[in-house]
Image 1: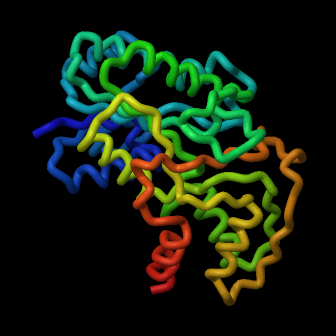
Image 2: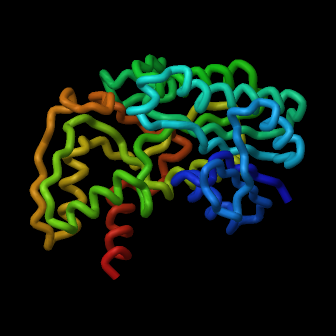
Length: 282
């Protein structure tokens, strides 16, 4: 039985990965840092020495990276912290992998490796990040491609599903009939189900490649709000479109991704939202 190690299993995406693969034919270990979840093992991946010892003790066949720090209010004020959380631990994993060449490393990356000018980015488009977060993630991508013998890099836009912060915040506001200000910048929301299926497919058929996954639909955050309101017909919430240039979060104009052909048979955003709200109302 292959052993999967999920780094950052206490976060939203990591916890979803942990539960998803726990139901499959894998031996799954997940890590935590601040969380008290007793099902997960404590790890400070910023400590290179301890991280290497942890990897040697656990001997994973597959590592899925769900860790790191995205909070732009923090990362954009401290590039060194962003690298400490998002880049240096990746170097530790590759150091371990060089001594364990059969290890498969699946790295979850982000649309923030792009500058947000043109949108509809493909894996062949050259990254040009203009945020500290995006720069640290791209540094990791480059290091993996140049040094890893067995890897997959999966880029996703905003991942949505039950428990994801933005998604749940928006639903709560809509249900409470509140006034909601949403920016007009574009993205391609990624259903968590699509991301999990993408990870599974790269485990089944590993290939040294950069891949994009999304919900296939490009829309602005304001338009996404309209989609949520449309599915809550009793809501009288008031949606207000805001110019993205007024935001304080380094939101970029168009970070939409074009899904890789490997995932073109996945369900789209509308399917996910319809299924989600059908179950949400029951």
